[in-house]
Image: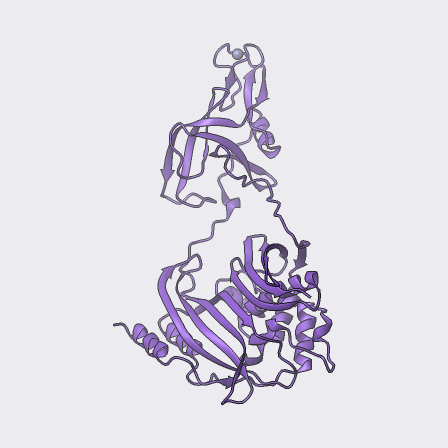
Length: 431
Ligand code: ZN
């Protein structure tokens, strides 16, 4: 057995850690800073005799702090150290499932107990080879001989070797077509989402690729028609190597026979067979280039912006450096990737990014802003995807899944330009 495995098994075998108190009791100033940074105006968080701590702050109270010494015996920390020493030095939160028994109030001093649930890996992921580390955490208040569990959290992080992920493809590096007098109409067509075929104005023959002279009658008068955009796969190949600028491999290329009778080469969704009906779609690379690509007839559209059904009003939040940094500090998360761009970039990230405690707070703010300040959040399970970087926009939508015994289940999705930042499921009790 490897040294790493041995250490992980030893940590797992220890079970629940001794409860550890956070550095401060629940207090109004920290709640106010959190509400300001998250932008959550819920009156329940306001200072005063009825002040409550937002449920999304559960983890904040026991965050270790900027220069805090890690208490010995903390399973997550010990696992991180073991993986660091094995070369898995970068970390990314991936899942956070919390339940809340009741709201905490100023003066209470929650303590956390946690155990290592599982370490799964090594696995090849988009960011690099890594291990998924899952811990189970509980927060307690009250006397040690009669503790009251106020919140729980299953927390999963990916601990990975930076620089071992799949290389990111810059689509704009794609090989550019030669645009000339004969072919300009074709590329103007793709930009306008039209598949254009050259015609001979004398004998009417269609031809592709375009050229100056009609191969049938040798006339030079030429025009074009707009094709239906449907055809069949005449033949195809899968390109595995060498690398193609701007393209992810493997890349399937097809010779498509159009309904109009001419054939055209283009990239096609993988898995097609000869004879399959396909249709064109238009992949806009940038202002200068839109490519005609192919997909199985009737497949979901990649090129049309997908309008997502939302029961809750759509909320668009501009991500600024100030938002990322102020929320990281207000949640007592001092990981450098959330406030120091140079260090974030040296760890392979394009910029600083929102931390998981902030995403938890924003998701809950979104739901309670809509459902009303008296809404009680019972649980919040979230899965993180694409990082939310400054200068992007985080767009929240929400769908009501069910209402049973007074508990409403709501799915919230937050999207950024690169894809889904967060998928969350909340259980709430509406006022
Ligand atoms: Zn002709």
